[in-house]
Structure formats: C-alpha cells, structure tokens
Image (cartoon, rainbow, N blue to C red):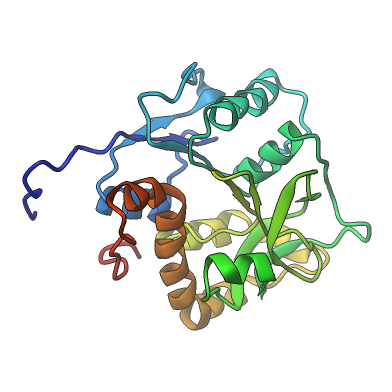
Length: 257
C-alpha cells in the first residue's frame, strides 16, 4: 500500500446504512475504501443506532432493501427522519434505491408504484439531463434496477438523469444530497445472488429474465462501474478538491468488480 504524503490527513469514515443482516455495500464500499475512507457500517433494522451528528464522519450512504419507504415499521420512519442530520449539517449524503426514496419522503415527496404497475428489474436506458451533463459529461446509457416503486421530484431538487418508466433516476438536493434509483454498487457475486433469490419477480410487468440480467452485465457494466467511481468523487471528494484548489485526480477503480 502506498504511503501517505507528508502532512496528509486521515479521512473520516463514511457511514454506511444497510437493511439486511447479509447485505453488502458492494463496490460503493470497495471504492470508498480505495479512495481512503474507512466504513462505519450500521444496520438499524437489527437495532444499530444512527449517530446524532455526522461531525465525526465524511458523509453517509443509505443503501436499498426489500422494504418500502412507505412501510409503517418504526425503524423506517426513524431512518427517514434521521436523513435530516446530513441535510442540516450539509454533509455529503447518497441514497441508493430505498435510500433515495427515504430522502424524497423526508423532503416531502412521494414514493409510489407505476400507474400501470410496471417494474424496473434488469437493465434499462438512462438519459442525463442538462443539469446532469454539466456535473458529469459521461453517464452510462444503461443501468441496473431492481425495484417496483419510484419517487417524485421534491421541491427544490434537480433531476440529473431520467428513464422511461420512472422519470426520476438521479437527483440532487442542495449542494451535498444525492439520490439514485438504480444500482451501480452490485458486484458480480451480488448480482448472481439477486438473480437467484429474486427469480419470482421476473414475471412482473416490464421485468427482464434472469439471463438478461447477467448478459446485460457483460455488455453494460464497464461504463456503469467507471461512472460510479467518478460519481463518488463528485460526492465525497469535492471538499478536498476545493480546499487544495485542484480537481481530485482519480483515474478509475482498481479492485471493485
């Protein structure tokens, strides 16, 4: 492992919120570690507390899960309310799928199924908006999904990318809060598990067969993986870049698969 340059400061950990006992942060976690961020992993569904402040963290990522942001369970409401902590403290926050839907609920938006009950389970087209292209010139054209609910665009939020069945695919609120409906974090092993365990969902409207999930990965995953690396820079490395007056140098992921 390369040594740190003289005077380099150790980065504060990123809070990682997962929703099942065996859930993984996937290559989001792998990439954050590669960028020098320790991970503080918590599972509120299993009783782990969330911090009252993120003063000791670089930011937070809330991942997806099989539950709905509309579910009545107390931990769902508590976790949704907690998102006010990074928003109030202006700390970097990323919500992925369920995590993005929780953020939208916190901001007064809605989470609901498609009017025709269409799902997105598999690979689907993504189109960056003008706001999205100004932030990042290169977006993947196809992204991986596993959901049957989407979210509205909260008041004050910007749409960064859109899709066909569910228009809001990537959003930004303020300077430091971000949400994506799709899953860029899946490693190959994670996708294989999802395809096996989620096979019963492939008969849902607009869902793709399991073979299409794995075949699509061979075609579409490389640009999605590259995009994720730079997207995490945009979220978690901008403060470091502004402090030094330079854009973060980040060639791309080495280990995350």
